[in-house]
Length: 328
Image (tube, rainbow, N blue to C red; front, side):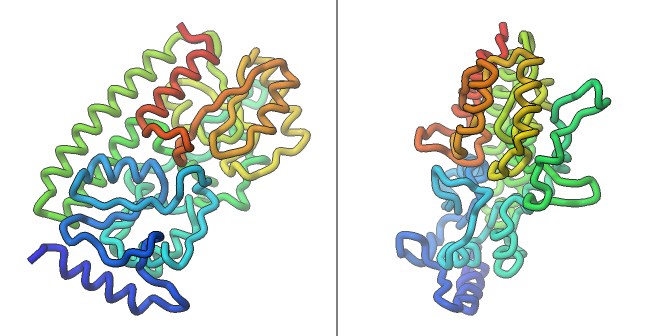
């Protein structure tokens, strides 16, 4: 008898009870049921899918709720996806990043959820922002940070969810995910731990490449379309100047555009960065005004149609940063 058959049966039964108004545990391609030999994992968005697949290997079946090319901030769950969450043996999410998923987990999968934001404290959105000497401290322009729209508030203010842009933090999340998979599937716990250790080696190598590659640069400020890069800039001693705040959907005010253009001139920025999943129009406007070019800096919230994986996209980001910052 499969060691996970009882919880799987319970999950399926729970799904049946919750299947109101056409909500079922069907996948998008119309299939039902699950592979009894593999742990059924639902990942909230791409970096969590990457972790689950690399650590789970052949022992897991991973479904990503966000389709390639879609913006994960905007996730709305269809009935089939709610069913997937209800049936999953493990749901890997970052609480506060996708409110629709938070609600579905609370209702249908609370005991089978792994919230990666509990592994390490999230940074305040202000951390990793640009340091204005005349204002005496770092900030990420909270007037444009979208506090009303962005989840994750606590006494410290808005929290930045983009922890995966620091490879060392992602490695730590991977270690904890291996432990959580081991509890769901004790017979293969050692395999999950071994794969997490192997992935940590790869992520630490990537971290070393970033540290060396960004050590000696003519500039250390990056102008970005939204302030998703606080973990990256904090790790590698860079500073981000965000056109908008944490929510990429916010429209910057004319005053904010003028401020960013002025800062770009002050720091002799040669590149204004935009993202794969967001329109480049605002970045192009500022670039044209200050005589800079535009380039993609990928926050890796999801994969674009270009493919690759977390490691390859991060290395592309490193090459892009080295060019933009004139690193030697």
